[in-house]
Image (tube, rainbow, N blue to C red; front, side):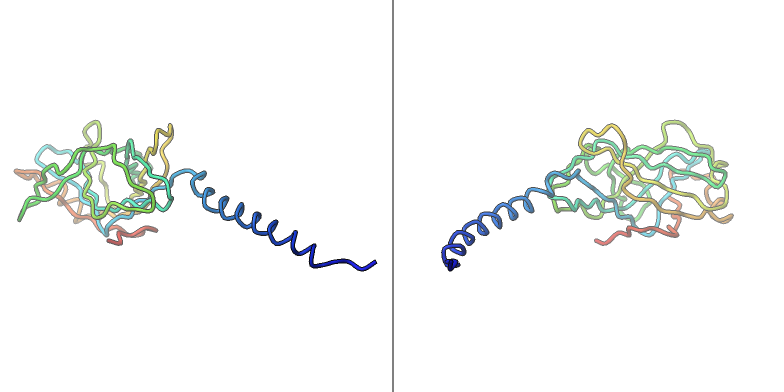
Length: 202
């Protein structure tokens, strides 16, 4: 018996077209099923805010927020978790966005604090964020050595913080001496970041 392949292919072609359409729909929808992932890209230094109080309780960080997923994400809370060379840990919470006053190290509030929303496949560029410890951190806590900074963000009402970035800085004896000086006004001491997987790109 001779097989009529023409009828077979006539049947197969629309079936393959339907299958291709279903595959395209799945590929389009699949990224929307994954959790929103927002990353933070930091600049090459941080700022520790010194004053005449004997405490260093504020950290300044310039960064980008990058959302590589198609869904928008809202950052509800942001924390820098700092571990010093003696493995002591402090959390510094997002206080505000700021900009530097012209010709000075003093800052002024730029826009309201969190929550902040990053659209899908978008980014927020060159933001300056001030973090503040809930208590008072004695300047002696900032001893010479390497520190680990881990940035945690609570996105879209998640109960636990996601790691947005992690980097290391080194406090030298000279830097410690600058922190211990008495200043009339809050003064930003800049400390280079040693190693980071996500450098500021805008």
